Length: 66
Image 1 (spheres, rainbow, N blue to C red):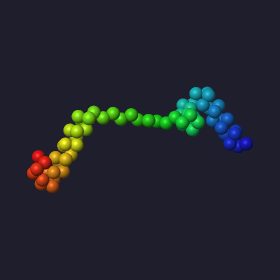
Image 2 (cartoon, rainbow, N blue to C red):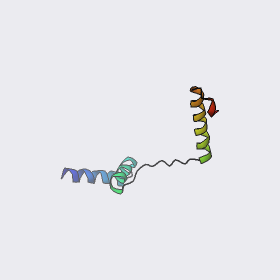
Image 3 (tube, rainbow, N blue to C red):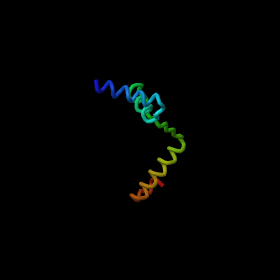
Image 4 (tube, one colour):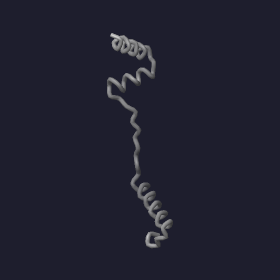
């Protein structure tokens, strides 16, 4: 009975517009989550990788990678 009363109180708060409760209930009962979309530009990633490899090569004194 306690859990039922607690859920009812949470639902009532949410229905009154409590944003925190709306978010929490959405995550619990609707499977909602906070997704962050990350997009990569292939040419930027390749440039970063090339820079990283070049820096490691310089640190290790590998002339072939310059």
